[in-house]
Length: 569
Image (cartoon, rainbow, N blue to C red; front, side):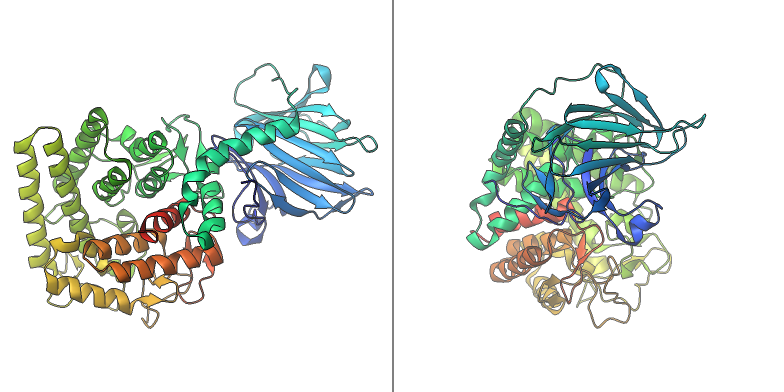
């Protein structure tokens, strides 16, 4: 399984399970705003810190030269006709570099107070306040020099160079430090360390390769993205955490994490449980969970939709259920989360909770939110019905029949309120609680999300939603805003592009509604899109071009679920 993953590290950084270190090719407008040179950067994905740490350059005949990139899950290689540099992350806090035929130059990000300190044994510490970390450079073989002139408050620059002696390889280790500590043992052979890393990834990846043969290369790349996006517990992250990306979306959001948990359930039940529960580690006494967390920051100004009961049910179908103690934990946190919506987001007390902002729905700038807020949205009620149905099932399994009956009654009442209030005979409306009107113009597939209720919906509603979903389909899947809409934007975030979560909700809902062929067709379109364009945050609905963050884990996770569970049955 030592196959190439994706040589475009501008899309998917090179990293490993557990690490806050990543190597990326940085360029383009977003990077230009930093004022730093484009190129290959060692980066940090700790929250609140600057991301760029050191620029890596190949030097031949005294000048920087471009290198061609290749990679496996364990080794990133920069090739040049004069030589090459190989990079491995043998542990979460260590980078190993092996250089042949060229010089490797490492240029630290400039910032006030940055300083390079020599240590005994030829080691150097680059103390870098912008990154909230220090980095120890340990030369293992070859000639190693550091140029770091001190100017009273900071080094004007900090540049290290590693050069091989003749045909021998030069080697260097870089340690990420949060506190002072002795240098680590770096006597391990580079190739053996790389083989160990590859074996770790292979064990994670193998269960995902049961999909159809044409999808297996993409499945390996998707598995790599998920595996390499996990970081160790630290600060706010109480468990191993799969970040949404190690590009710039370096957080865990409160619905993204559940899609990642669903995918990981195919390979590692404990890691899947941790991904599902990680946001609930911060649930407050009223039942709210944060909008996002990272190791340093936590945001509670927004929330995300309650898709958790639905996804946990699907995870349990994959794994054969949960042990009683975990089921009881899940029941407790989901009960509080459900009650929070009816207590703190139900201003009319009519049984239909509301969104305060598009961000709360996960569809940040969707056209349905172009009305005075709060918004009474059909998807929210549908998710809560599914979640209460799940809670009824969990309560029954836990031997709590009265609670089970109560959840079922509440689910039935919410479903009735949804249909009575928001179904207009042809479609579900999203209504401002201020004006009691829907946004116009809006032609979003958002109104079709209640298909998640499956056969809970009357047949005439199911048929109407199926017709509307079909109308939004492009060659690649369901456009979030119909391409003929006057407010459609090709790169408009939730105003047109295709997204993984909306696709997953529609596919699963269609299957639950008995529309198995249509569900399979849409799943196939989305998987072909990922084969073509990778695992971007979203995609142009007409061309399939990747948009925004191009290495986004809920996209890879949805691909893995669809490829292994919806296109194989």
